[in-house]
Length: 541
Image (tube, rainbow, N blue to C red; front, side):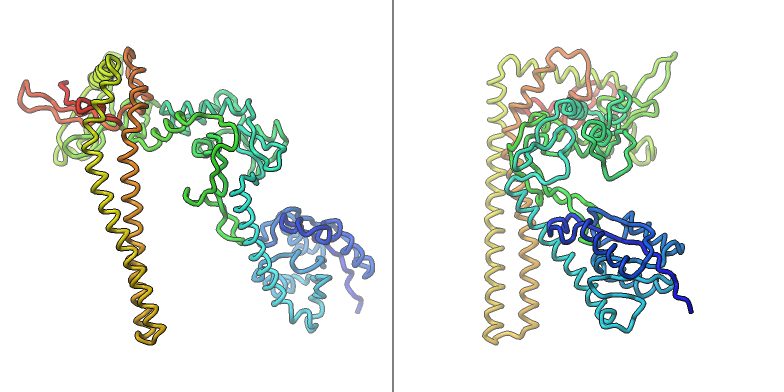
């Protein structure tokens, strides 16, 4: 019978890890070995398939997929690779292709340096092939582990290892590749932070930038530096890159690395690590934004207000800040038309949705509420401007006793819990020693250690919460200077703005309409910092 002509596809792969090995794994070296083998065996070369810079742990590689498509459609009947690891380092998938897929389609597979040839399944190399595949995957896992450790160590030394710098920066030519400002993009970054600080949502910021025709980060890098991204580039902004910029400490001049990781060496899906796992080195390069602007954005992010739009696209300055005094629900904005003029009102959201069976009406016109809040802000600004130092001292006196009492109680509780942690460690040590001395059965010992360990973990979580509470209370007095600076700006402000609310107000509690005529309606404005007791005021509408 006439032997079938061997039409081969030459597959070559080089990953970023392989590049460190040197010339032996280079594409050129693989090509030389494959072409020489094909010539010596009178194979007809159909095409070369090259995946450069791609890991072998995944088969979602463009060229290996093209190779497999050509093999399955009969364009080629033989696949030639330097060794098994070039085809892949996932032993399950490699085994499936070699044992099931290729035989089903009549495809011959040859790995030259491993002596694997599927046309001779009785050879010793074919018997050893599963073991070689497992070893190749182990090598990938071990290499991944070493690379992760190296990258983390380099990050700790301040070496910048990202493929490209964040939008607004470029990598310098220094040894550590420290980011330097790209002023053209930095202008846009500053605007993004300023717009967010004013209360604009990330999506609204993206819409504004798109309307102005400003190139997205991926399009900008392609146009200016010729750097292509991993995803298809539509050239438009969305809320995702805006949020990424707003949460990146790099813009403060701090090198923040190890922020993202992948699920495993097999699954390359990225995810953001917890902030406690980041490697951050402060003051490594020139900042694009100030700390005060960053803090202002963070205040907006953690504010109770999310500022919902109406169907007409309008966001009221107080939207999201208002709460019902009786049921605790948020107040809902609605409007009515009067002779072509829109009149906005607020009412308890639960009353609007569920009726008076749940909560009664807390209706108030937006115009009246704006005037109440604006008047109160002006009064506070005037009070502080007349004698700033006296106002600050009054605030500190008012809060000193409360702060001291709170911190003292928390510190006593903290010490008690720290003693409990130490006691659990001692009990675990005693249980272990008793087990070693054969005074305690192994299962009882393990049970005790597990119990003490669980209790210790719970107490440690409680300690973290107490330490956080102490930090928050102690930092309250540090915020007074910033609050004074902010409120003084609004001494003669003509109207209430959303930025003003974000800077000054924590929430506003709206009481219901009084049933008795002439009785005061209660409205409580809670500021972010209380300049003396007078800043929690109950006002008449």
